[in-house]
Each structure stands twice: as structure tokens, then as C-alpha cells.
Image (cartoon, rainbow, N blue to C red; front, side):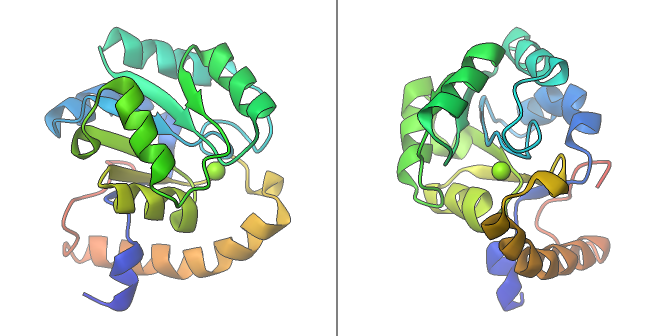
Length: 183
Ligand SMILES: [Mg+2]
């Protein structure tokens, strides 16, 4: 394992909404009963309100008996309005990759971190924090890269190297877990 493997997500999807219909089934297979989402560029473009497909996703997860939360480094107003629109609990100003917010979100759902999935678009905040807090992680491609703020754009550069290395390893079949069907 190279040094980059320290940053690898457990799974990766280049088309999250393309596979999200299968998410409840995949989670159940892996024994995961709860899921925490990043918001910006994971579920909607950065700063955009909840859209129909995001609302439908939360409905489907709830129908499948899966508990949900959103966990964002963004501020109260943005995070609360999104969470209310999709009907889920939230933690804002989370300071990811600090593990504190992840553990609070798990506690709010009554879920063990090891039985909880985190879905996010950034390796150095979302995925690192999930790994530190002992959650399972799914890295997704940003919904709309052009909406990334400047400091996020800078982090995309080293992220690209890590993701390329991760995908090479996946192709060789050396990854501990295979990625999503569409990755
Ligand atoms: Mg994000």
C-alpha cells in the first residue's frame, strides 16, 4: 500500500444520483443502517437549495428504514434550510475533518459509527473526517465543479492524484472493497 492509500475512501462513485436508487440495498448488504451526507457539491451544487432528486433520495432512504443526517461546514442558515427541505436532521459549522460532528450526528441517530455511511465530495474534509470517526465512506464526484469556492478548488488538485491512484488500484483488484457499480 502506497502512502496515498491513507486517503482512500472505502467506495467511490462518479455518478452518485445514478446509483442512489440502489443505495438502500447496498447499505443493507454492508450492514449499514444510517447515512450522513455532506450537502454542497455532494447533493446539490455549492449553495443551491434542495432540488427534487435530493428530496426524493431522502424519502426513499426513510421508506427503506435508513436513518439520515446532513453534516456541513457551512453555516446555520444554509444548512438548516436544506435540511428542512429534505426533512432530515442537521449539524452545521461542523469543522470537518474534525471527528466531533460525525460522532454527534451518529449519536443523534442512535447509530454506531461503524454501522454508519458518510457520503461526501471532498477527500481532505469529508472522507478524512469519516475515517477518523470510524465511519464507512463513499466519495462522490462533485455535482457541479464550477460552483466550488476558491479554497476548495485548490484542494481538488491533490485530490485528483489520490483519486487517480485509488482508481488504478481498484482496476488491479487490490482495493479492500470494490467501488460502486458505476465507478
Ligand atoms: Mg462538499
